[in-house]
Image (tube, rainbow, N blue to C red):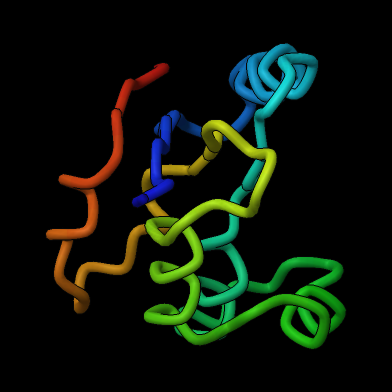
Length: 108
């Protein structure tokens, strides 16, 4: 049985998206993915974030591996994932076909 129900929130910086993620976090069977595209974005763009090196060292930086994690089967006991993204972190040099497997909504 395929277990891959994914809800994706696309937003801009400094929105109330973290509040939304925390609300979903309270639901039984929900797994939160919080801005997993950020490390590949930092590695690709060289943005001068104060914790840039620590983020790159502690997070997956291979964009395709991140996409596989975000669209793949969920662990046992997890009904769905809630994923929070900053829209500009979706790197344009990669296909966006993976977005079709998510239930997407947007904050601005």
